[in-house]
Image 1 (cartoon, helix red, strand yellow):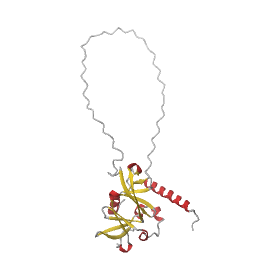
Image 2 (cartoon, helix red, strand yellow):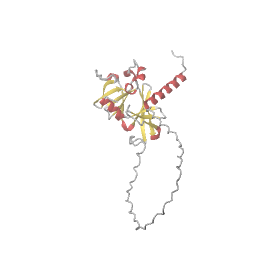
Image 3 (spheres, one colour):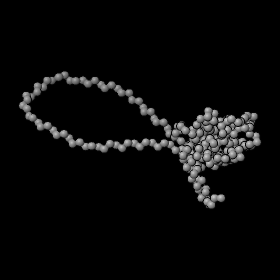
Length: 241
């Protein structure tokens, strides 16, 4: 039995969760700019000695006035304005609602614009499909359609976090299924939390999504990951990150 006080344990869990989210959002540091080369002041060369020569005065010849041709007209084009910041964000990013749900201690947020619904998870109603990946739990029937359900934790957690879930049984942990991609996929979760309203500046958006495309960013106040359900569905369908 652990002798750590409950308050200390909660603080350690919060710090660990913050470090985990920061690791998901960490971008490669940009290379430092090279320092400017030192300025070297060179002494001016000594002027050669002047030699005075007796030369006859030059003859001045009057010539016709020179008429300068007008300079060619230069066409000026308006400068192209730089792209607006955040123009690659979803169209609903300025103000939107999101539903929070928890998976093995991690809180995720899914925009209501991309939510297909939430259903109860009953392991007895699950049809297992042998031969699939370890995150594939099986099929559930919803509105007459078979919906594949996946263990969300095995898809979002890094390997070091998954090692802590060794022996974890998602069939005993899961209580709800979050439907995405118009109900084509189901994300098993432990519980569904509140619906929150967010503004653009309340989300730390990712600038580079070459990896973990499903992660749009983090909700700063709630310290949770914002899910891009379209990218998540693509990951499941094509089997790539």
